[in-house]
Amino acid sequence: MKIKMSYLLFMLLFSCQSETWQVQKTVRKLIGKEIMWSNVQQYVYADTVLEANSANMQSVLKPIKVITYIDSVVCSSCFANYLRGTVAFTDIVNSDSVQYICVMNSRQITAFQEAIQDVDCPRSLVVFDVSGNYLMKNGLENYTDMFRTFLLDKYNHVVLVGDPLRNNDIQDLYVKSIRSMINNDGVAIRRKSLLKNIE
Image: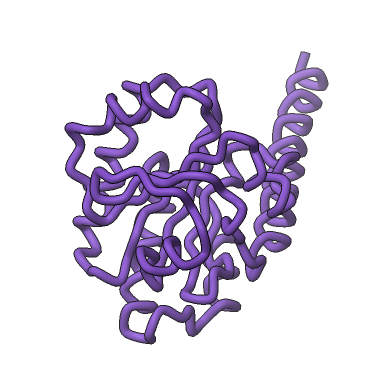
């Protein structure tokens, strides 16, 4: 019986270490990656639906961005609640240099627009990517949702990976990093140090 329990405990510990190593490996691969969205089709900014083009997008983007991908299985009311979370998060850092971008892969644009029309989110941007180009262009189609939310610097390079609305430790790390980036013109000054904190 003791041998079986020891074996089970060993397997559990080994699995956890293996999974942690895989997460670290994936995060390291994503850190520094440039994220592009010039290929998306429509976005909502300040309650207005606009056709996406590089001039329009550049006029509304902020230097520091949290960007997340939300797939088509999320219901419109769930997304409205998530969007309220983005408002709460951007209120914590309270800077006009920071923006939360939600990339939606949904063909039900009207339903989502109706769901979010009562959400006051001045520092959030909702981007509709009906054809799914965002994932393909950024090579993210094989990643799980765990690895589809990023903190980006002003050059759109990944500084941190993980959803600050779903994990308090990640949120603390995001807030600390964002405050540092605000004081450094939208650039992360200690990328190696941030990687150590993720471990």
